[in-house]
Image (cartoon, rainbow, N blue to C red; front, side, top):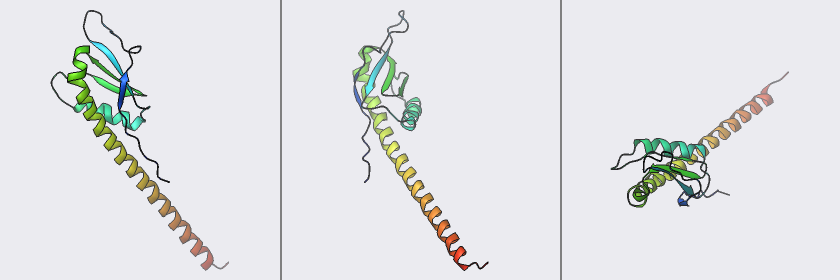
Length: 130
């Protein structure tokens, strides 16, 4: 039975985990909750892609576990950053599904090779006379 892959999405704001690291600046580490903990490969792709992504008012952001943290002004979050974060999350979900698909194909290929090797050895065994 094939397992359905559920896309990762932003589900809310973790106000307990969010903080203002430098009180002389207006910037906060705003922690957003994700729909589930993200696999390492998903987080790695998101983080790399975010670093490459360019738009006006871009801020640092990263994903890990079931959180996405962005360093920004609170008033920038909804209008400037959420749409861009969602764009990269959508791209990351798509790339992660492709990654899983390629992993599945590689696993199937290895199983087939192993089966063929086993059959070849079995055939050889029946032909040998000692």
